[in-house]
Structures are given as structure tokens and as C-alpha cells.
Image (cartoon, rainbow, N blue to C red; front, top):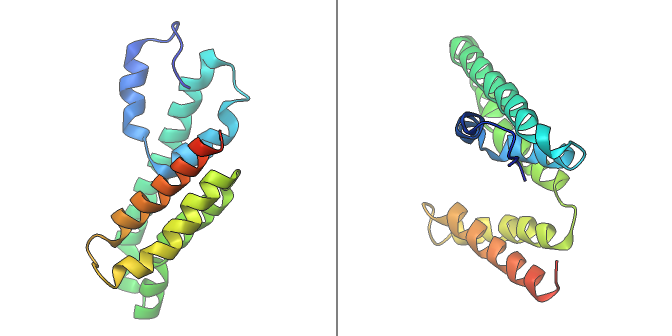
Length: 140
């Protein structure tokens, strides 16, 4: 999706560092509207933006943690999972993706009862595999 023969290889090596769920979901929405020649530049821009924001907010959080009460710290600890959940809901554009997200969401707590260490991995693996097989069977 990003490759174009006119772009130098170093851009692809640089862009590998920005591979994350957040940047991919943001870029995926706008990528098809951008000329193939400029997609890698768009991806690098998204990556630098999300990376810089994450580093800055981590520094601010680390420096301010001593000044926050326990309830605020607990609230901030759940921001990331809620954020990822909202991003995933926003990505539910077709039935296969919806099956993966809903399946993983349901399976996560169930598998957690059996194995706390492996629940997230297996919930994602099972939910994603079922969604993939459904998509393959239905040509999506």
C-alpha cells in the first residue's frame, strides 16, 4: 500500500519504526485518497506525529504522577485501553473486522478466567482467525 518506485529505500526503513495500531488506523482511513507516490510521506508524517505525542505525554505523565491522587492515577491507567477500544470501534467498517473486534472483546474476559497471562493473545488470535476465515468464505 505504501510502496512506490520513485521513493528512496531509507524512507521505508524509517517508516518501520512507526508501525503501531494507532498510526495504522489513522493512516488507513486517508491512505486511499492520497497519490501512491506520496503515501510513504503521509505515513511518516502520521508516525512522527503519533510518536512525538506519545513521548511528550509520557514525559508529562511521569513528571506529574507524584502530584496526582490515587483515583486520578487509576483513571489515567484505563485511558489507553478505552482509547484503543474506541479506535477499534471506529475501524469496524465491514463484517469481518466487526467479528474480530467483538469476538476478541467477548473472548478476552472468558479466556482470562483460564489464563491471565495469555488471555489477550489468544482472544485476538481466535477472534481474528474466525473473522479471517469468515471473510475468506464470503469473499471479503
